[in-house]
Length: 85
Image (tube, rainbow, N blue to C red; front, side, top):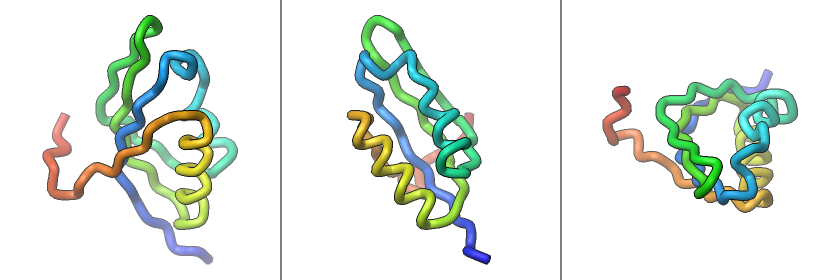
C-alpha cells in the first residue's frame, strides 16, 4: 500500500479555465481528496482556489502536472501560514 500525504496549494485560474470542472478531475482521474479552504472565482477575470489535497505522492505529482498543462498556476502554501477560514 502506498503512503498517503497531504499538500496545500493555491491554484490560479486563467479566464479560459474558470468554467471547467478541474477539482472534479482531481478526484476522478487522480484519486485525490480535496478540501477547499478559500476561493474566489469570477467568470469575467479568472480566479483562485486555496485547497488541501490528500493522495499518494505519485497521484499528487501527476495532478500538479495536469494542472500546469491546463495553464493553471500551482503555488505551494507554506505549512506555517495561517490556514483558518
